[in-house]
Length: 350
Figure 1 (cartoon, rainbow, N blue to C red):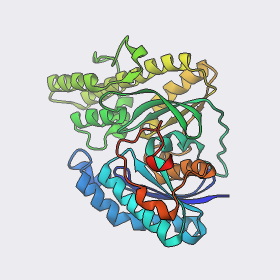
Figure 2 (figure 1 turned 90 degrees about the vertical axis):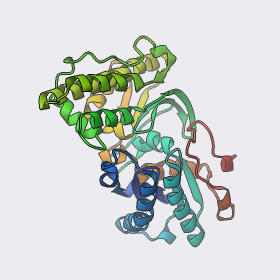
Figure 3 (figure 1 turned 135 degrees about the horizontal axis):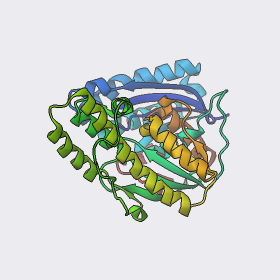
Figure 4 (figure 1 turned 30 degrees about the horizontal axis):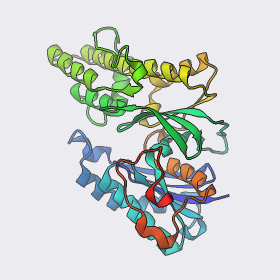
């Protein structure tokens, strides 16, 4: 079975993994959250430096856990976009070095495709059975996308964000409430103790779901005005504000998904990205799928919900089978593509 060493440095997680087919042998992550927390968001120059400092360690650790050496893997895989340009560059450079040193083919992976195919990651206790076409939802700090998955490598974007992604909006709401960065997971905890009906925040794009777009800028602005009016904030106010914001943000997803699921018939639904770790939205979407007889799939652990190299390894396996890899003599063609689209091939793959 094909063994792949995968690397992801798309934003603020330095990750290395080893996969065998779609089975994950190791998945090592080094989070930069504490580094960026005092700035309230990712600082590109700091992210690049942290990746450079940690990438060697995560790769060596991933190999050690998998009990393999670089010469024993069949290929090297790396995220080339979308993502933070100077962060992507660190992973790409390292992947090129390894491919050249060990004479291995390089597989370049779209980050969103990695999230889509993260549900295919398997362990001895977790097996996957998915048929195409399928509907995929990717919700993260930078992406809110609904994608029709026709086959491995064949995608059609159905819906996308026209401003903030959902994960970014949740983080910004948390920051307004003084909950720190990254705040999505903390906001979820606060929301569990609050009353979602306490405040009258608007549901984004209400009545305009047929446009098939996500938009969170209006909700974010309404939240800012509400928080300013409610100051000083008590614990009870924070709980209720968190619950209200999360509820309206998720209702936007729910209403749009209803339109999509009723228009595009599919037997399987794939949910990936950092926000897929949120139990409330999982419950909501699982219910929508159950009502329509659609099988609901999520990554097998929280570590494979957010940015990670295991999903890149799994996605690269399906590309390897189609021989969509870069040979050592063609490595100079590979470069970062910060705004890469999941429905397009990379230039060197034509």
